[in-house]
Amino acid sequence: MRLSYENRRYVETAKISACHIVALDEYLDKKRHVELKMDQALLLIHNELLGTHLTVYWNSERCYHCLPQALVNVSGSGKRGKPSIAAVAVSTQHGSILQLNDTVEEKEVCRLEYKFGEFGNYSLSVKHVNNGVSEIACDLVINKNPVDSNLPVCIAFLVGLAVIIAVCFLRFLLSLDDFNNWISKAINSRETDRLINSELGSPSRAGLFGDDAQPEVWRPCAVPPRLRSVDTFRGIALILMVFVNYGGGKYWYFKHASWNGLTVADLVFPWFVFIMGSSIFLSMTSILQRGCSKIRLLGKVAWRSFLLICIGIIIVNPNYCLGPLSWDKVRIPGVLQRLGVTYFVVAVVELLFAKPVPESCASERRCSFLQDITSSWPQWLFILMLESIWLALTFFLPVPGCPTGYLGPGGIGDLGKYPNCTGGAAGYIDRLLLGDDHIYQHPSSAVLYHTTVAYDPEGILGTINSIVMAFLGVQAGKILLYYKDQTKDILIRFTAWWCFLGLISLALTKVSENEGFIPINKNLWSISYVTTLSSFAFFILLILYPIVDVKGLWTGTPFFYPGMNSILVYVGHEVFESYFPFQWRLQDNQSHKEHLIQNIVATALWVLIAYILYKKKVFWKI
Ligand SMILES: *[C@@H]1O[C@H](CO)[C@@H](O)[C@H](O)[C@H]1NC(C)=O
Ligand SMILES: *[C@@H]1O[C@H](CO)[C@@H](O)[C@H](O)[C@H]1NC(C)=O
Image 1 (tube, rainbow, N blue to C red):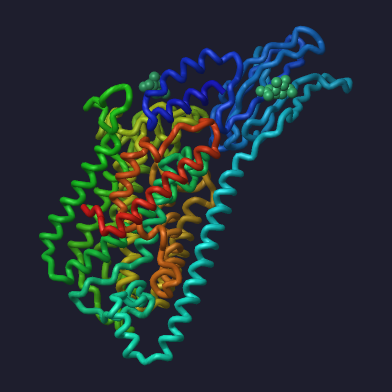
Image 2: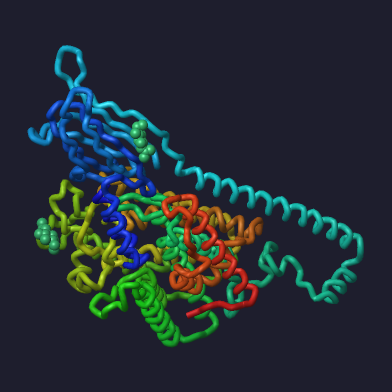
C-alpha cells in the first residue's frame, strides 16, 4: 500500500535518521511489482465486471471514524473470462475494511471486513452472479496461507518461562543445601557457629536479604532500609522501556498506540513516574530526618531537575546522517525533561508541606484511619487544583480552527474534518509556546491517522497529569512509611487505591477505547490514562511488596539491578542504541523474529551491564 509505506518510512526516519532516503528511490523503481514488507499481505483484486472500473478504499479497523483511503484503481475487464487484476499490499496489523466503489458512479459495489495474515497471498474476485438478477459478488480466496507472526513472541515467552523455572529449581536445590547446613549447625553449639562465620568473614543470610523482620528499630536519624520492591518495580518498568524503545520486535503491541488505547509500550513511562514519586517521598523523609535543612534540599532538588532537563534535551536531539541539527529544529520536550519538571514540582510541594512521619503509626495503632491522606491535605489540594487546570484547559480552551475540547488525533480521523487539530488544546499550547519546529515531528498517530502537524507526546499540558501520577506514587510511599511493619494495613491500602482508581478509570472511559468521556490516551496523558496506570501500579506493589520485602521469596533479580541504576541505563540505552552489539545487520530486515531476537539481546545486555555495575558499586546519581 503506497501511502502506508511512505508513512512508515517517515516514521522510521524519526529514529533511524535520514540515511535511508535512498531506500525510497529503490522502492519507486520496483513499484510495478509489489514487494511485501513486515505486517503486510498481498491482495490480488480480480475485476471480472465488463467495462466497470473499480476504486478500492481501505481502512483499518483500529482507525476510529476515519476517512477511507483510496488504495488502488482496477480497470474493468475487457473480455468475458479475462479479469483485469491489480496487486496491492495490505496491512495485517489489525482488521481491514475494504470498500469497492464503481469509479464512475461512485456507488458502493461491495464491502468486506477481514483480518489479513502476514505474508499471505489473497485474491478478491468481483463478478456477476448468474441467478437471473444482476447481482455482484465479492469473494475472497486464500492463495497462500499467511505466516504466524506471533509465534516468535510465544516462543520467547516460553523460553523465558523455562529459564525462570530452571532458576527456581536451582535455587530450591541450593536452599536444600542451606537447609542441610542449618541442621548440622543447629546440632553444634551457637558459639562455634558464630566463630566459623566470623572467621570466614561471610555475612549472615539474614543481613543480605532482610527477610527477617528488620532488625533495626526505627530511629529518627536512621536511614530507612531501601525498599527492594520499589527498586524492583522501577527496574521492571525500565527494562520494558528499553525493550520497547529498541523496537519490541516491531510488533504493534510493543509500540505506542496510534491514538486512544493502551499497548505494552504505553505502560512503562507512567510506572516510572509513579515510582519516582514513591522514591521522592522515601528519600526526602530520610534526608530530612537526618537533619538536612530544607533550603539545602531545595537547592539540590532544583539542581537535579535542571540536570535531568539538560541531559534530556541532549538525548532527544541526535545528529542524523543528513548532517548536524540546526538550532531552529532543537526539540525541547522529552521523557527526561518531563521527569525533571515532574520531579521538581512534586519534590518542592512535598518539601514545603513536609511533616515528620508520626512515630505512632509505625509502632502502634494510634493514627487515625486515613492519617496518610489527612496529614497531606495541602498537597492534595494543590493536586486537585492542578487537575482542574488540566480539565479546564483541555475542555474549554478555544483553539483556532478546531472544536473546543477536541481530544482526537486530527488527520483522517473524525472523517477528516479537523486535519490540523491533532491533540486539541495540548497540541495547540505546545505549538504556540514552543513552536512547530521545537516539538516532536513524528507522533504515533502519523501512520494510521495520516496526521501531518507536529505533536509532542511529552508536551506541556500532559506534564500536569504526570505530576498527578507522581503524586499518586508519593501516596504509595507514604503508605509504606506510615504503616511500616504493619503489612496488613499496607496491603489493605494498596488494595483500596487499586480498586478506587480502577473504578474511576472505568467510569471515565465507559469501558471503551474511543467512546468514553475521557479515553485512555498516552499522547495526551489523559487523566483516565493516569488513573488506569496508577491503578495497575498499586496492584503491582500489592503483589511485589509482600513477595519481595515482607516474605523475601524473590530478591527482585534481575530487575532490581537496573532499578538501582535507572539514569545510567536510560541514558546509556538511548545513546548506544545504534552501536554494536545492541544493533546489527539483520539477514531479513522484514522478519519479526530477527528483530525480536535483536531487541531481547540488547535489553538483556543492559540488564547484564546494570548487574556488573551493581557488583562494582558504580551508580550514576544526579
Ligand atoms: C499469489 O497467488 C497467485 C494465485 O495463486 C499467484 O499467481 C501469484 O504468483 C502469487 N504471488 C506471490 C507473490 O506469491
Ligand atoms: C492544515 O495545514 C496544512 C499545512 O500547514 C494546510 O495546507 C491546510 O490547509 C490546513 N488545513 C486546514 C483544514 O486548516
